[in-house]
Length: 59
Image (tube, rainbow, N blue to C red; front, side, top):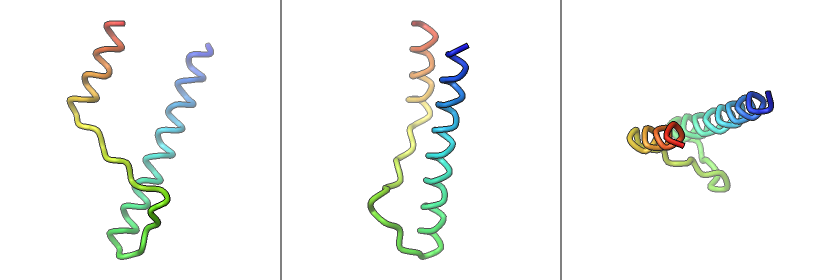
């Protein structure tokens, strides 16, 4: 049961980061100055994500 809680917590954290990143990117595209204090993280490649989950399945 604790595993589900951690998973939900991780999902919430992920969506908060993505929402923030998308908001900053949107503001930048609209011409607003975006602070450098919270840089937009580069997205990972599709292959990197696949490799990550394959490693989890093997473990």
